[in-house]
Image (cartoon, rainbow, N blue to C red):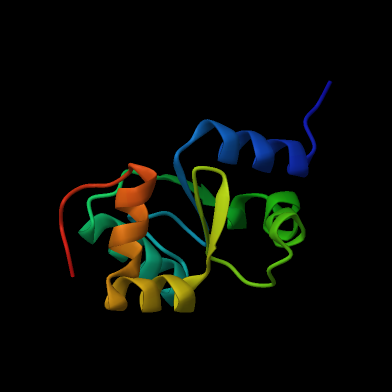
Amino acid sequence: MSMTAQDSIKSTIDTNDVVLFMKGTPVFPQCGFSSVVARVLDHLQVEFESVNVLEDDGIRQGIKDFSNWPTIPQLYVKGEFVGGCDIIKEMFESGELQAYFKEKGVGGTASA
């Protein structure tokens, strides 16, 4: 039995504490917004699974349907959708993201 895009997305989110659905990879982002979120996670020393939505059109559209959020990147922590680039950037700048990761028990010790 083959997995649907929705099954694959759910499985990835369920089996990883932190997942970033992005355009490109953390090493070679294909979009400025994806790059910003990946750099924030790297700066905070948060280990994360990345999914390159450009490799699979089903995943690219499927993640938008899954979260009911129209844009990529999308960050999930412990199964919960946190937000896209603007939200993550604002949370990081205010210190809220660091507190959120600490509350969820993920990430390193770096701060803004």
